[in-house]
Image 1 (tube, rainbow, N blue to C red):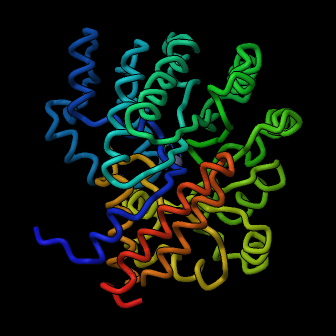
Image 2 (image 1 turned 135 degrees about the horizontal axis):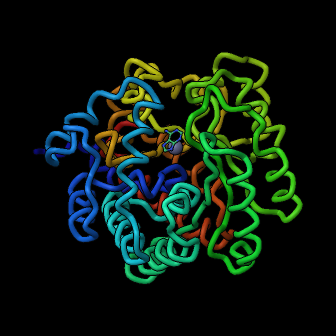
Length: 353
Ligand SMILES: Nc1ncnc2[nH]cnc12
Ligand SMILES: [Zn+2]
């Protein structure tokens, strides 16, 4: 296919990804491969007949919980440290090809632990993938441990205590904390005590909010100490809160293709990209669960371009904000900002600004 100059620009634009679940990068091919390797019988459901039937099913999620059912079922094939390392490495290679320079990636230990996988197996495996990405691809990475809302708070507390006991924050293996899974239903503030404790230790905090849930999910997450909001698209329903988010420079990690596949919006045109730009709300564009939603980060960038026809300077703002709000050292930020500047300069004259 002939690349338009804008697509070429977007492909090479230095990116930061802040919202991708490593388990959400588990491609159907790898589900079948790992199941065979470990002698795991996949669920009885006929969608597990073949890679093709599974992929077909992924095209028709009815909502977040319908997707989560398959997401949690699929990740059950991850058992050994090398599975986690291979999964992360496969994602980082794709991200690198898409122009990602820095990636902050989520993982869901509670769900693996509930199947008997040890904390160290998960963290050491993912860390191995991260280290390989840093040394072989020059991609900087951070792991964000996610608590899941569909399991009891006691299980999250146990995991948090385990993380503290392992000194995972102090030794740099876990950089931040997030929460995810079912939104509407569980108490909005279920991780209040954990977040209060983590905030005292200066652990960076984020939270999935305002994906399916109304803006009070966002305000509650902020009240509990979240410094960033994952998704947050329903922020536009609360003018005052939106002003506050803009004023305080709180980053939204927006995932357009995910929002369409999970029917939070009818099409990418409904994702409030233009409204956020106009209101001065900072956001990054991300893939969420690319193996399930039909596209990695660059596909999300392309989809936004197709829907909003942004110009080079608007993309520069998006790219710069995503660097500025990354949880990395200033020196690394400066490096990526410099490459954005050079890239924009190169394309400025070929694509009308
Ligand atoms: N889009 C999403 N929302 C909430 N939890 C998730 N876990 C993985 N993907 C998710
Ligand atoms: Zn997510």
